[in-house]
Image (cartoon, rainbow, N blue to C red; front, side, top):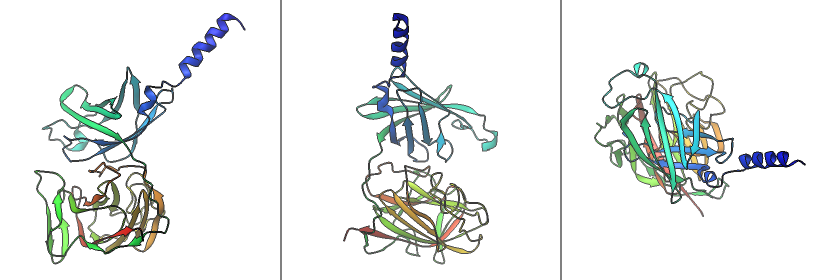
Length: 326
């Protein structure tokens, strides 16, 4: 082998070898954003760091889905990724469709095993937010048939909002109880239970008006979509889905105006969803937070939350039965 060929192969191999320092960015990260206006948490997954195959997925501002990151790089120890979306500026009072597309830039460095980062709309330093990412924990609990029901907890007493608090400080609540039914106005605050839960079965009865869009947050982290979508094909945004992550097997929705039932079993990351008597998700694994998340600490008990910031929903029953080891 010639000296030139050997040198070329060595150079090529060096370029392809993983960068040990950059590989520390790989993994799933739960992100706390202290200044986020809606009290939401974010989620980030990084794969292929230290190689030419770098890619990522993100749940966060703006918009509510799980998105592939279109522009991502690591340079000089800094992770940087960008979305081009309709980012509104502070004080900008425009319908969403009229908000100009802008570049949202996320940057982060590793410090003490955590991601410490910022978000900023490019060219607008007044939009800057600081955020901290911690590695998503491994959760050992599985839905293996060994769990038993404890005493059920009535989260809605049919009379008032006792046991609930607002998610977003300073925003009008927008919820009331009339005739034993809990309901909200459009663009209300989100509700958060004062009690927290780990493994449990949740049972809900609710009614949707035409165009309803709501959700129930499990441990304040994983949204079960509640949506008026009778007759539509199932998707990761359908009624009964784990929003943007797990699609129901079928659309089991009833038409708007009819009372509907939801039963959700959550053990560790394993989730089963029964909508109107039909099992639509069976022991699927939730990979991480959804857009409704406001509590990023996945290894701790968390609250039940109810989305009120979209459209109206009417609730007449909400019960959580903790699941425990015998």
